[in-house]
View 1 (cartoon, rainbow, N blue to C red):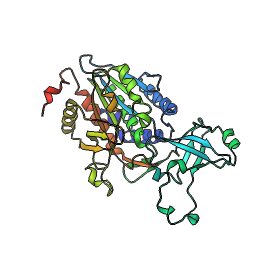
View 2: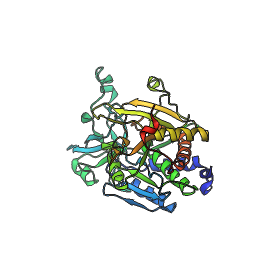
View 3: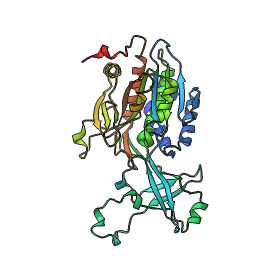
Length: 377
């Protein structure tokens, strides 16, 4: 495909380089600036102008067939983490969670206080010394309110002097690990991998002989309230929204009953998502888009997996409700260990997802009906 030869590097190699770089840039929800600036430079290198809205979403547009439905392709650039809640007199730091941080995965994790480029401060989430742990404590998951971070300071004044204060953002210490084959682990595969795919889709569509007008959005605050992309959708008023994020891989023993999505077996289409833990929302994809991308995958010889799950949610659930409604779909890449400090994905899935999107978006033309009555089952 054309995308394989652009800039002299294979698609998979470009994805590895960009995903790895993005995962090393801290960008807690509400503090995505460094990630946004890096992605803006990537767009500029492609010759694509970008702008930011007041919330911080990064938005770029490639003009296309004005008679075809307009498309918004988006991925969130923020990550989950912690916020400083209290600084103890002895220099230890208490925190609040920001996003769905799993408490059982926190003790002994390395973290980073995000003060500013070149001024960030390392810390470790304390874990009580094993030799002093009682039998009852060995199997207890500590609520985050009982945890504290040790950054090596011995007084509150020293903490403040380092630039750490109430409200300072904290992320897992950024890290990237190359695993066997095409697999990589990192601190924010969710959703820096999706951001890298968006860049490559933009690159591919620039070279496409036909395309609809396509907006590319790198959204903010998804891990916080799932609504950051809504402001972009309100401004752009797209006919179609394609959200890119991880799809839960179910190929490990603890996940096998939840589905049949395998790492390295190709991109995935979410046929149903619902968040039943206090947030009664989800996404049932528009049948026109299910038909479009299923047919495109078959024609292109791309294996397209299918997922249906409860317990996860993306901001497409809110984007689809904008104005008179937006035809929406969640497409993504299988990933393991979501919201932990090291999530895992497969670069071959990212490459195939990129190819699927470039080919599928080119099929969106004036003949594509978004009338649900044309897709009755």
